[in-house]
Image (cartoon, rainbow, N blue to C red; front, side):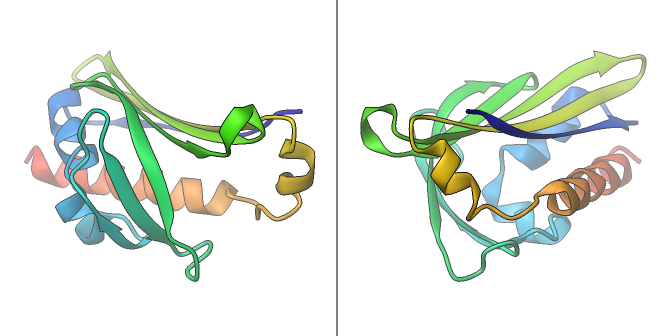
Length: 142
């Protein structure tokens, strides 16, 4: 069983500008209304600890699995033996003079059916994240 959330925005800023915001945890509080706190550098094979407004009592420790500057960032968390995995992908695609930004989170694994029941609807949180990123990137390019 798989559950998935996704959001896409057209951002009038170069992928390098958008990447600069996505890959810098120290600035998330400036533009990302969905984050209560985030610690640790966003670096390949690193671990980032974050607390979100969706579940402010829980700290998520995500592993940075893929870092392709100005193109793709993937982080994940889960349980051993493939019992459950959550994977978030940030994709930046050049589009005219700007960037097509897509963020997708997918949950899979043998226990996913049980765990899905405890995951709230992330649609609004995804929209807030994308809108904050868009506003910050477009302001930074000016």
